Image 1 (tube, one colour):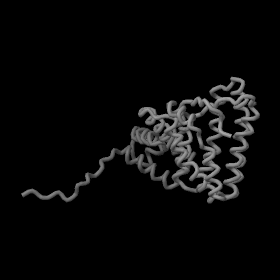
Image 2: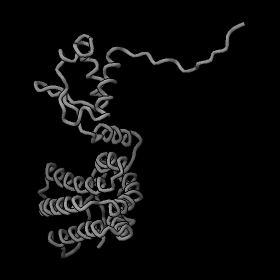
Image 3: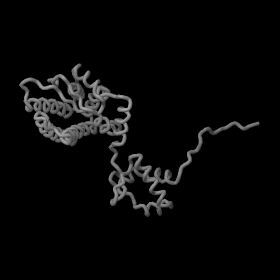
Image 4: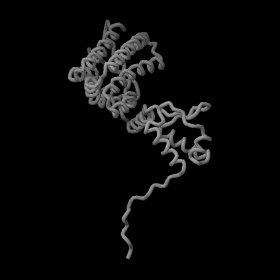
Length: 268
């Protein structure tokens, strides 16, 4: 008579490299190895773990694949900051493979952003308010330059990325002000998915008109957060992400990651 199997879970078999990678990972997650810290040299790690240098190299590759370390040739192996760039790139690739559009991302943002801003208004510190105001003014400065170049058909890819980066840094500071660790970790991956969009010109509009409009919208948002009034902040954020039907249609026809050409002006 055969004995009944009691344990259904099979013990995980690990190579030496996997064991070493898990040990280093545990030190990173525990904060013993902080962002920017350099790992011991390959010979030092081999001696500490009692393994060959080939095992150390394999363990390093595993850690790189997990986005925990970055190998800088000639300098060493550094612990990466928890910015989830690998996750963001993988998410963008996954969305492209399933034919996602700019609207898929924007619709998600419309649900999420007002509540994030409302939470930030509740939890934001005085130092964070000062930082958000500083980043907002920096964003407006970059937007002014970008809008002027765009108006004169002289906006390079580098200038567009500079504009996007300034916008993301401001939004990341707002996400951080929620003091919610999950929201903080999702900030950069989600924000990087959002498309640039080109709004139709209004007759007799000037670059200065668009700059004043954008500056006003963002200063109202920042003021709402600084007021620590969650309802006011939520309303301001909802207005910021509102899109007219024509814009929604245009975004539904634009693949994720590409610039959306919107046939109507930016809502006033």
